[in-house]
Amino acid sequence: MISQYYNLRRRIALWRTAQKPSMVYPLSPGKVRALFVMTGLMGDTIMSIPAIMAFRDNYPDAKITALATSKSQELLSMVPAIDDFMVCDHSPFPLNPSKIFMAKELEQEIKARNFDIAIVLLGDDFVPMLTRVGIPIRVGVNENIFRPLLTHSYSIGSPRTWGPRARLSSIMAIGGRIPPPESQHPTLKAPHAMIRSRAHAKLKNAGINLREPFVVLHPFGRKKHQWMPPGMAVALVYQIQQKLGMKPLIVGDSMEQASGLLGLIQPSTPYLVGNLSVPELAAVMKRAKLVISTDSGPMHLAGALGVPTIGVFRAIRTEHANRYPSVRAIWSDGMGCNMCDWNRCQVNPCRQLKAIRVEDIINAAQDMD
Image 1 (cartoon, rainbow, N blue to C red):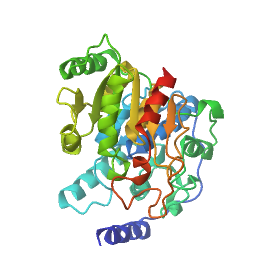
Image 2 (image 1 turned 30 degrees about the horizontal axis):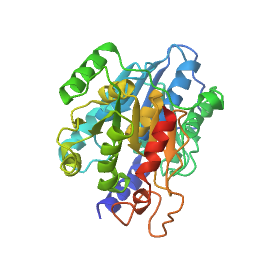
Image 3 (image 1 turned 90 degrees about the vertical axis):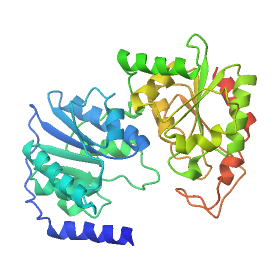
């Protein structure tokens, strides 16, 4: 019911937003004021970073502002091409009265900044707002209800398969140059010294000796079907110590998420759950010998940092398995699944994840050494 009401709000927003004239002048080569809308999930945000970098290459003197969520701002703070942030943790069509007021304040702030161009990478529902405030060049995806409000558009194809190349099309849509295919995978620089110092202090408090190698284990995901089965995670904790000779460090977003698993493993197992910012997690990963993660945001983060990583995938969802040179993907070829879709599972834990052998993950880790 709520989703139906929200979709109605979107249709009303399209109907009420006046469409601007189609005459659009090209961007000047000078100090362009650019707004990038980046209010998506971690993995999607990372795969969209090459578009920001390409814009900076085309407009080196531009002032680039990112409209981001609090979480994506943490991540994007590691992207030197971004000069400034505006933070929004709510929908542009909120139902809560207090958030309606916040949305109006955000609209006023965007208008006051007089942006020359807005490029929507993640957050299509902001297009009516960008149109109302009069941003003259508005770039967004073709496959969206708000396509009539855009001055330039690009195609991402299927939501299941899009990657960095699709978002780079936003730069091509305004006549910009993009890097060659071999340079299109997302990359992030290591966090600065202050972040590293905080992360290393947390590692020591968790029981990690910084002079010894350790493995970051992320067995969770945004949705339950992305999680490793508990038995797999428990076995990995043991095998990382026995077969790889290293300490495992369990990381996760919240204690509520991880409490069930932590109750199954040895009490002495180090963990940092719910107390790492995204840059701190990046610093922890850069310090690690190896990352083992489900197909989730932290897997994308490790890949963009160039950290040796084992990605544990559902066989029905391997589109991002080869996004990063440093990631080796593991899935079970022999387990089909007619009951589930690419973005949801009917069975928990996921049967395809359950079919993966811990031995194969450990062997892959040994091969990467």
